[in-house]
Length: 69
Image (cartoon, rainbow, N blue to C red):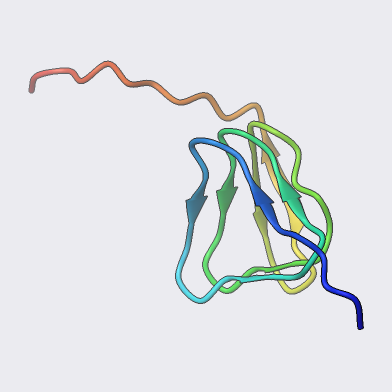
């Protein structure tokens, strides 16, 4: 089997025990849930989960402003 690269953009969070298959591109500001098996490209600002990961939420925005309690 020929090898393929995995490309991971900025601000991507991975849960526990995730599996990323070859040739996958994970776009910016995405979340990969625990135990997900990523077989297809992940669009930006989305959350994926499941075995053969599917998009479960879109429109995620990162907020770097820290608020005092």
